[in-house]
Amino acid sequence: MVKIKVILPDCIKIDEECDSVTIPGVDGDFAVLEGHTPFITKIRPGVLSVDNHSNTTEYAIHDGFVTVEDNLVTVVTERIERADEIDKTRAEEALKRAKTRLADNANLEIDFRRAEFALKRAMTRIRTISR
Image (cartoon, rainbow, N blue to C red; front, top):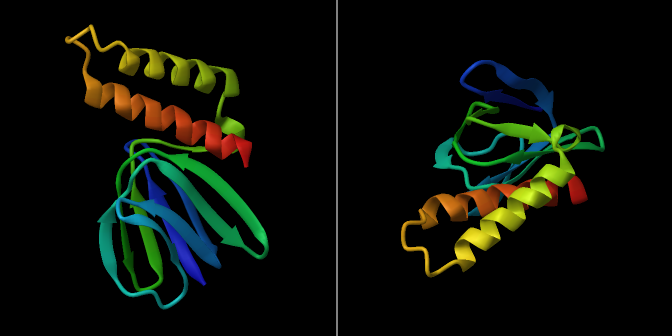
């Protein structure tokens, strides 16, 4: 078994044992099983999956970092959302807004990095609830 702990600025969101965890790392998705090699890496926007006895719970995660050591997966992030916590309409509206901002090349004052991150967040939320 592997223990996963997800730490937010104001609380611990997940603290449980599971069979495996799949995490969207900056170099690609990776799975952590019992006995995994210790390491640390950054997280990119994507879907974090917690597998436990043939049940999978999926979360939209947007940033942060993860450490793996002695069968403990510790994720530190500002936001993580279960599929049932995501408002589909709001996520679709955010996706449209982000696409519009990025398509508006005439507006040089736009913060493209922020707009791209908003686009990735919205896409991650929609992907999480569509699974």
